[in-house]
Length: 408
Image 1 (cartoon, one colour):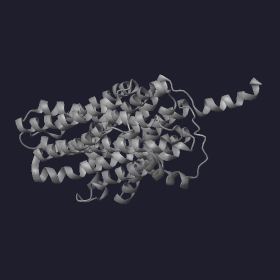
Image 2: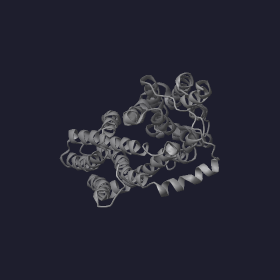
Image 3: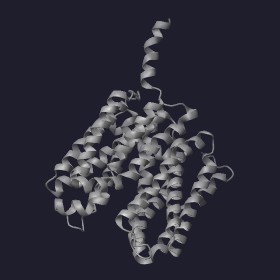
Image 4: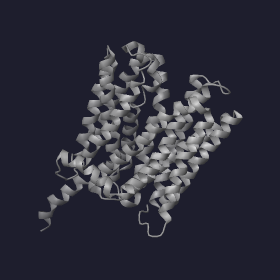
């Protein structure tokens, strides 16, 4: 009798492997290394543009196409995590990223460079396959902690990519940055192929039906819409601040050099510390109260940034940056922790939709930063930065209305 159930038990174990601390660290490292590919080019535009034949007016396409590719990957590739064996899917995406990075390293003209940049964005969405996979490999009681730990790796990759790119470009030129990253992707793919467990979602859905289900999931999951709205507002603030702050710090009264601004940006690395803490708080049932705190804290961060601009206080600006990054990152983890308590069969699609939603918020924040700063200066940025979370907080208050059942 027991032997007849052995294959079922073995299949269940293979389909739902348990995560270990070493695997968590590996997934966090992989997330950081992959996510960094989205940001290496940002500080190098002035070097890359002339070399591949892009005029200054369109050089920002280097960053835009990578970001657009990432957004497309969230919608077109990440949902596959619900139907395709996860390890094979992730390593395949990293292989595409590696080839695209090699093409960028060798690119003789702008056309090949931009096509490769788009491919890097699409395939780098692999980071958002790793996060729900990690969530699926842990139990309910520690899921928030695991997600937070993996997300901290992603955050480190994002925050250190720009300064690392600058340092490497000084040593080996801008092509050396992408050659380094290609080598890093080979290392990541090798480690994952050796040590990442296989996870079979066990669903046999067609790709067309999978994509069609995204609208149904969005329509029928009020928690996804609510958590997405909170994060749209906060991530808009994140992009707004980090797009406009370098402009403010480069001019009067701060007159900071590019190197000094890069060091300022490293202050945001404290945001990576928030993810594991937020995950643990979420596991203990503090998501609802924590959400209110991080939204109000984001308002406070911009108020402090406004004070820093008005009084030429660099310390106020640094503290504001740290608070902002801590709270935005915390809210990301709160949202993922809530969504991962929903059906495990749609976890990758939930994550893809959630990240895509606040990706739009980030695009809005960065898009309005330059025109608002040009027209109204730093006070205008501060006003916009307070407005986004203020609207989110009003919406948050509806969680406490009688009869509202959409609670985290």
